[in-house]
Each structure stands twice: as structure tokens, then as C-alpha cells.
Length: 418
Image (cartoon, rainbow, N blue to C red; front, side, top):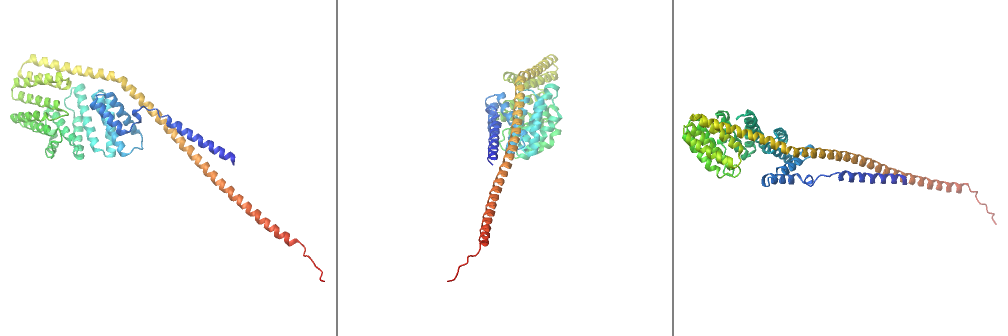
């Protein structure tokens, strides 16, 4: 019995030591030990307030990596879907790694559909459309992409369903831009009709600016150029009240006014507007807008019949576009070392998690064995006690029977009578 107690004690000590070692393997850095909510907060702060993109991607990557666990609560999965969405945006915007961006956005969409996260799904569709459009215009030379339009449509549909009004309004704004470049507004007429029937307030920041953009574009395609100019003027005025995309909205309104003026053969006014835009975008490093402005200047000069100026701005357009492509490749190459580090970190995290899982399974198995031995020990002790009591009872009974038998076997005493 003493040997059994000793074996059980050694087994329990071994199990305890194994548990301590397994959880001491956790060598994650400080960020990896933070909660998902805290990591999301820090990632947003790094990206929006401090401009530390690499730090933001580390925070979001740690959260996204937690999607591999099957025991996450719905609230936790929502944050993971958001992190994947943000990673898609970062990889496309700052790293020009469109493959990685697609990968993260697709995963975000999959989680959002599975768990019904419509608000995040709307953002994911919008981001997907943006990176498709950006990639096509940068590398393929296309101003319109049917895939980008389809994703923007879906962003609008889901956003209206989820009442995610900022996404809904931005989706319409982006669709108007696509159709303006395609010179055809008919493709998005159902979405525009739904948009005009929305009862929104000025709390939706881009609402008024987009409404003016919509009315101006419709007037332009209806041949009402003076009305279109008036709406674009209102759009530019409303853009002054926007905080997030103020400069982009102002520039878009000025570009569109210039193109309306060019259509009206008021070429010199159109060129004045475009020259102002070129100066603003050049000073502020808005490379995409500058490329678009150079292209518009080339078109206006060509319409005027000034072939020399048209060729000059066509050259500037191609040169600026080529510089942006080279810049994207250079930045992608520069950041590739960091991305390699991130991949190695993720591999190490997976290895540590695998070790934890194996140790956890072994711990459960050893605990189960210990519990079985403990139960067997308790049953054995109880059996021994019962057996001991039974033997004692038999012994006492035999003693009683023996006393009775001895008394019965003794001869009777005889006394003489006097």
C-alpha cells in the first residue's frame, strides 16, 4: 500500500511539473500577451495617430493569427475579422503587396459572412474594390474595372442593410468616379436611385458632398452643363466641411469642373482649374491625383488642337505614372525584410502553439491517468477496509461459536446429598 501511495505522489508531482513547463514555453513578446481589444486599439493608434505602419501591422497580425483557434467567442472573431480587413488595407496602401492584401481581405470576408458581421463585410468589399481599382490603374492602365464595380456594389448593398452609412455613401462616391471615367452612368442607376431615397443627416460626413457629386454627374450626362457646374461648385463648398477626405473631395470637384468646362469649349478656364490642381497635388505629394490631372491636361490641350502641349502633358502623365510604379516596387523591396521577419515570427508562434497543444494534450492524458489511479486507490482502500471489517466480524463470530462449543463439551458436576 505504501508503494502505491509513493507511485501516485510521484505521478502527481510529474504532472504538475509538466504543466508548469508547458506554460513557461510562452515566450511571446509584450504585445503578443495583450488582449485582442487592446491590440486593436494600439494598432489603430499606431496607424492613424502616430504613422507607425510597421507597428500597426504587428498588432493586427497577432490578432489575425488568433483566427486559427477554434475556441474564439463571436466578439473575439469580430475583432479578428476587422484586423484582417485592416491588414488588407495596409498591405495594399503602404506595401503595394496586392497578393497579401487579397489574401487578408478574402479571409475577412469569409469570417464576416460566417458570423454575420455585415458592417465589417461592407468595409471589406469597399477595400477590395479600392485595391482592384488602384492596381488596375497603376499596372494595367485601366480606368474602369468590372470587378471593382461589382465589389463596390456589394459594399453599398451590405452597408445599407447594416446601416453603415459612411460606407454606403463612400461606395456611391466611388461608383460615380468609376462611371465618370467610363463616360456612362447607366450601369449604376439602381444604386443611385436607392441612394437618393436614403434619409441621411449631416452626421454622415460625406453625405452632402456625395449628393452634390451625384446631381452634378447626372446633370452632366443629361447635357445640362451649367447645372452640372453649379452642383460641382456646391460639392467643392461642401468638401470644405469634410475632415477625413477633404483635399481629395476638393480636388475631385475642381477636376470635374474643368472637364465640364472643356466639354463646353471653355478650354482656358478648364486649364486654369487643372493647373491649380496640379500645383496643389504636386506640393502635397498626392501622386495619384497628379497623374490624373496630367492626363486631363493632355486631353484638354488635345481637344484645343495644341498638339505640342498635349504631348508635353502626356509625357508628364506617363513619367509620373512610371515614377509611382518604381516607387511602389522600391517600397515593396524595402519593406520585404520586415515582412520576412513577420513571416518568421508567425512560424515561431505556430511552433510554440503546437508545443502548447501537445503539452496540453499530454497534461490531460496524465491527469486522466492520475485520476484513474486515484479512483483505483480509493476503491482499493475501501475494499481493504471492508475486507478487514469482514475478517474481524468472522473472527469475532468464530470466537463466540468456539466459546459456546467449549461450554457445551464440559461434563456436568455431581454432588452427594447429605
